[in-house]
Amino acid sequence: MPHDVEYMDVLKHILESMDPKRPLEEDLQNLLRILAEELGYARLFLSILDPETGTLKLSLSFSPVVNDQVTYAPGQGVVGQVFETGKAAIVPRMSENHEFLNKAFGRTEEEMASLGFICVPIVNFYENAGDTLGALGVDVPLLPMEELEGHRRLLEVVASMIASHAARLQEEMALQKYLQSNVLPLGAGLDAPPPPQNFVAASKSMRLVLRQARQVGPSRATVLLRGESGTGKELLAEAIHQASPRKDKPLIKLNCAALPSELVESELFGHQKGAFTGAFQTKKGLFEVANQGALFLDEIGELSLDAQAKVLRAIQEKEIQRVGSETTITVDVRLITATHRPLEELLEQGKFREDLYYRINVFPIFIPPLRERREDILPLAEHFLSDFSGEYDKKIKRISSPAVDLLVQYHWPGNVRELRNCIERAVLVCEEEVIRTYHMPPTLQTAESSATDTNFSFGESVARFEQELLVDALKKARGNMLQAARDLRVSYRIVNYKVKKYNIDVKKYAGVKTRKKR
Image (cartoon, rainbow, N blue to C red; front, top):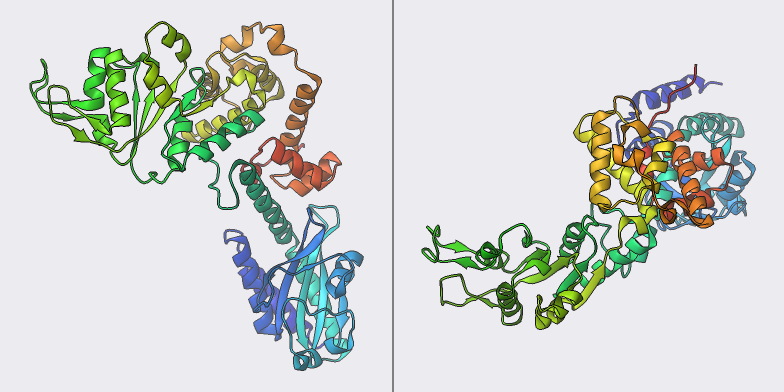
C-alpha cells in the first residue's frame, strides 16, 4: 500500500507522544489530535460501554459535540453494530447508509453527502479476556474503498494501542457513578457535600449518623452527641461544623473533663487581670474566641453546676461575663456538645441542670459502639493502615485474613480509638508487607470474646466472607472492578453493588501490585 509508510510514521508519532504520567483524558485527546492533523480526519470520537446501563456513551471527542449525552444501545446504528459484532464498519458515504444515525455531531446534509465514516471496536485482549469495551469512530473524506480499508487497518491498530486506556476510562465512569450514589443516600440531593475526610461509614447505623449530621449541619441548632468514649464524637462534631454556614469560622474544642472544675469557667468565659491568684493578665474565654463560629464541649456532663448555669446563659441570652468582671460581652456561638455519661441519671441525682439538658438536647445523635457495627471494623482498619503506612514510611499492603478475624471478633471496649492504636502498633512492629496476627497487641491475641461477640448470624458471616473476597480480588486486579468481576466469576453489576454496600474505596487499590509466582 502506498500509504503504509505514512501510517507507520503516524503510529510512531502516537507511540512517542503517549505519556503514562499524563492524565488519562489528556493523553487520549492528544492521540485524537495527532490522528486528525496527520490523516485529515474531520471528526474523531470514543464511545465506551457503561456496564451499569449496558449502553455505549460518547466519552471523548476531538470535535465540537451538539449532544454530549448521546448513548448507543448494542446493535443500534453503525456504532452499536460495531460494538455488538466486534467487527469494524466502513461507510463510504454517510448519506447513503440508512443505519447511520448522526446523533452526536449534528452533521449537515452537505457534510453527510461529502463524508464517509469508519468505526472500529476497542477490544482489550490482555486485561479483559477479549471483551469489547467500546468503539473508535472517525469522519473521513470520500475515498476509494482500497484507501478506506487502509485507514480501517490503521485504526484497528490504534484501537489496540488504547484498549488499556479505554478500560481505565470505563472504570473511571463506573467509579464516578459509585461516588455519586455513595453521597446521595446520605444527603438531600446532588448538591450534598461529600463524606467528611477520614470519616468511615460502611455500616447502616453509621450512615444514619452521618445523614443526621448533614441534616442538622446547616442549622444553628444545638447538637448533643452521645456514645461511648472513642466512638468518634469529635470527628462528627467537625463534620457538622463543615456542613454549616459557619464552616469558614473557627470550631473551638474543649474537653470539660481535662481541666479541674475551678479552671473550666476561666477557660470558657475568660478572666480579668487580678481576678484570682495567678491571673496576671486579662484573658479571653473560648466563647469569645469562637464568636461567629462554633464551640465543641466534650464531656459536658463533667461541668460544675455553676459553669452549667453560665453556659445556659451564653446559649439563651448570647451573653457572657469574664471571671472577675461585671461587664457583659455579647457572643454568637453555635454549641455542639458530647458526653458518654447518662445525663438522665445525672438529672435525677441533681448533678446536671434540667433546663440546660433540654437546651442542649435539641438534636441528639447517638453514635453506636464499634462492637455493634462490625461492618465498619475492616474499612476502618484499612483506612488506618493506609495512614500509618504512609506516616512511618512502611510498604505494608494489607491485613492477613487471620488478623482480620482477630479484629472482627474482638469486642473493642475502646472503640475506634482502640482500633486506631492497635493498627498503629501493628504497623510499627511489622517488617513485612502484610499485617499478621502476631503483629497485633496481646489483648487481641489472648482475648476470649463472649458468645455474643463471636457467634455471628448467618448474614453477618456471609457479609464478612464476601467483603474479604471482594477486597482480595480488587487488590489482585489493581482496582479494576471489571477484572475483579471476571476473577470472581460474577457480573460487574454484582461487584459494583457490593463495593457500594461495603463502602470500599476502589481507588486505593489502583496502584497495588501483586507478586507473580515464579
